[in-house]
Image 1 (cartoon, rainbow, N blue to C red):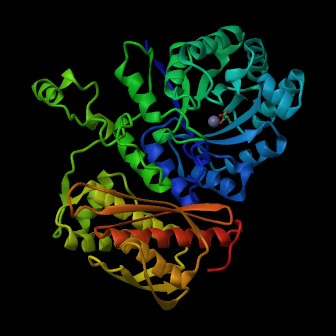
Image 2: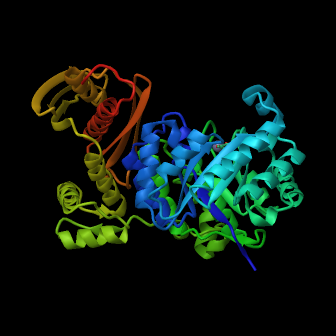
Length: 515
Ligand code: KIV
Ligand code: ZN
């Protein structure tokens, strides 16, 4: 009989720890909904004590999500646990995840605590967390460099105190598969009350082994894997959810367990996370990279045409790759649009937002005859972005002249705090000129950390999807915009990021000058 392998997604917590991947509350809720739809078992929504923004995000996710367990992270400290318990109050099913370091180097150099003190604090934390919920996870931070006997000792104590999940993190990505799997097996065997908890792993990718280590742990008895969409996460990232899920599913001859994941939601979720964070997916990335199912060599193409399984171990459609399908056109009405949105799992908070998205669809259909699912997703993203930030700045019009041998020049009209303002600027190229023209009006004093553009579908009439990352006063934000004209898409993305900078300043994040 096959066991259940629980999938614990930490895109919103460890994933957000990737420098530059910070997300707004509304973006986190959108990703959480995509994870719920994918049937992720546990969504780690944040670290409530870290900031009021983190607290509010965990609370908002806890309010919205009904089918997955929502988890909040807490150090083994009373204040952290109370804050997590508070944030999770609205959850249909809430988990507190508390941790303390167990490796000699962390205990001696960072915590300056003896092993006995660490066990005592861990037990106290679990007991306190149990006041809020029956679902308590304990993590032994840097377990990958901890002594096995000490791990078994602390695990026995925290399970006795009420922990129901025991997590073994390879915090620094130091372990290698055979050794890590053996260690997990020994930890389970050596913990007398191991049968009262689910053993979990949380692997970082510093040596490129996070997925391999996680899978080795599963073979040795782990029944929860902590992972992130696209392998996002601190430093080199965490184990990639899509790779873990598809390895277990494809190699049922090796893994004695199954996940409950709806794999067809993998690619749409990957795109959503890439779009929101601005961390685009490399083309050769397993499962979700653009080339993951593309056969370039003639021998491979011939083989696949004759018998698909000659070179394909998974079907692209099983992980959510759909051939670009023309779903709607210029003459499609509001009902067809709404019904396509329902098929895509998109629900708007209000009729007003649906109407705004439909207007965008009509404008796009005038410019682009074939509208694909990806186009619809992009315009939904835009509508959500517009409603999720306080739009202090809006693009009214943009005109850019670009000619061989001439310096491009942009003229822009913006609406800033209810007033129409005009600006113009030359630039190295049309995009540069457009962004400089915007800056000639707002003087944001931000630094541009990233500018990236991807085509949403294929063909020269495809919409370009632009992500920009701006920094001001230590606060980093991402902005997105899509349009068939990439200069306009760039201006929209830049303005979206500027609005987020303003919103962050208003919420009391480190401030720069007022816009
Ligand atoms: O990497 C790590 O050890 C963590 C813990 C908080 C689980 O992220
Ligand atoms: Zn981690």
